[in-house]
Image 1: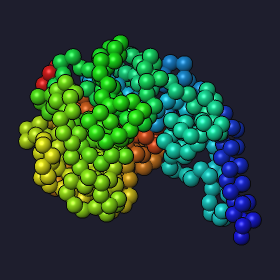
Image 2: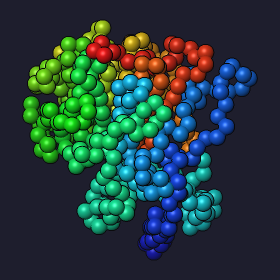
Image 3: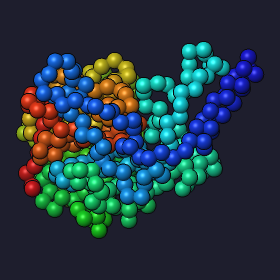
Image 4: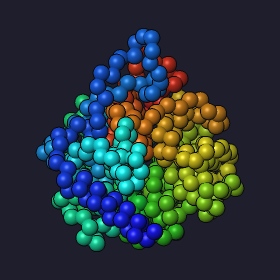
Length: 420
């Protein structure tokens, strides 16, 4: 039995090494197999809501200059549309562009098995020894910088056509595992915020990227007080500039700051991972959205598969369950229509609820096709109503535009904009 286990392990490692080292670079094509012949949905017979009320914009974003055939996207952590013509994209470095290998039978594991598995994405950009960031594999010598990964183009901006218009490479070394990027909709100067969960800190930059103006937390020092954070995740704002942070992977709290970033208070306790039902207890405090009218916070208690709702001072208001495993919500978003959207990384769907938790709709599917979702981690919408997503596993940012005749109530709401 032991010999069989050893043999299987050696064979599996052999396949992995062969595919990593033997794969020849291929032209970057949006980093996934492109769907071809996607028809316009003009109400013709047939069709289904794979993309909800949207059509995918093919080939968006464009490969970064100099990357063609060499490097591809890393794990796409965050995305924020400042406007239809300026969209910030946040990724965990870059990976070598390796062509998908042909299907190869693996009789050692079973007569009907093959690698890669057909019809699903073959490469997870967020996990494994060759992933972004390189994690412990780089320290052990298993991977090599410049060959298996490179820490470049962590934050950049593209225009409506997906062409790069800004490169923030001067800040690459500032980030270790950047998690999300935002601009407060109530900030006239449009400062850019980046949450870095492995540095346990939040960074605030001028809109042009020339200056770091504020750091919240003590970088590289985790903790659970007013100056230390434990792998924070997302940010959201009230109209008066009050800011909230979900904190996060290690800590189990929501933190409140004033408009200048001064710590005010925090709430939340560690729960029973995967089975917690008590209000105010969390396990993996992740997505966050705010209703600016009722001033309520919607928080994804990810590991317990529920949404908890609080007032701005941490008083519990409501909660609801999001579904059986593997359902778990990454990002939350609320636009001007004040319905709540969640990115479900387990079911690979976009999910819509009303403010009281009533389920309204869901759409999305797992595939190699453009427009399919795999661990969607970011949701943002521009003033024209275009929807953007960022997938950590698929390693791609995507743009969707409303299809002709779209039902407005089924579109992700346009963003709140009070300052610009």
